[in-house]
Length: 170
Image (spheres, one colour):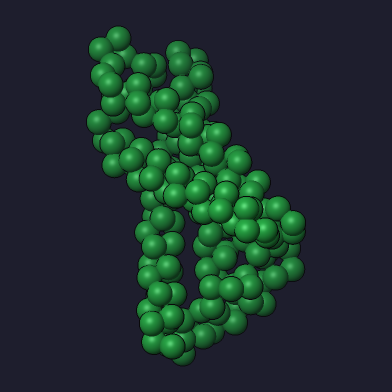
């Protein structure tokens, strides 16, 4: 990817990370169930508004990450699982996986991209289907997706930390 493409991806990554952290951190105070309550506060409106911003960013960031065939790094189920298996074997032997060229860390990032998209789409559907019979199902799917996103964010942060430790050791 070009220098400009790398800068765009880095800016999108920062924006997505900050948005996700804020949305997850403030989610316990969101009052919406079947519809936006008449007594909704600024956190409710901010969560919905920033959630739609996150949906836009999730789509554009995923597109940026997957350009020029890079999708194969993040989604190795289509022929690249040998690098993941190698990294898992290395972990068993105490070796930190490589952050370059696919493998376990890239698979974690791919799963995180999917969780980000699912969280954003289910949140938007939940909001847009207010009052419909299926709204509670969309809420539940949004909660599952958001919890998966949060868990994968923790795993991603650990992966990045391990990579930094590996860089410092070398």
